[in-house]
Amino acid sequence: MNNSGHNIAHLISNLRGGINEFILARLADEGISNLAPSHGAIFVVLYNEGPQTMLSLSEKINRDKSTLTVLVRKLEALGYVERESDEADKRVSIISLTEKGQRFRAVFEEISKELVEKIWGGTPDKERCEITEELKRMLERL
Image: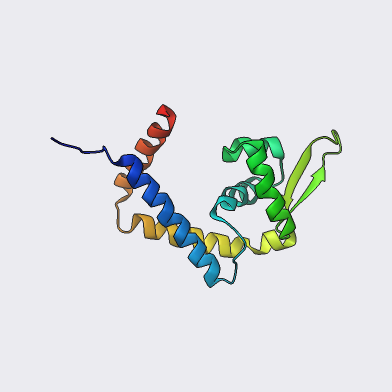
């Protein structure tokens, strides 16, 4: 019997674990021990799109508000982000990078580049696109 693809969840789980281990090891190499891989999605949005409301950030990183609150509070305590009230609506918090958060960008981008190179190795661009598109379809089906 052909079990092709039956272990996809296991493989993806192991891939995620390997990615997290790589990120944590590289952060440690840089002398950073207090960030988690889950903070990465927040940095990506803030680096690429600038300050965000908590609601917008929650939607863009696909995390519920309570999870995001914990992640942002940690980044805030570490000095990477700051929270300000929206002038138009004081109930709305806007999250933005601090100077420390901006300085971290070079390290973040270098680790990200190394991670992508490590994951894909010499995989041709066409295969990268096909795999990426199939993973997106898998997510949509869930």
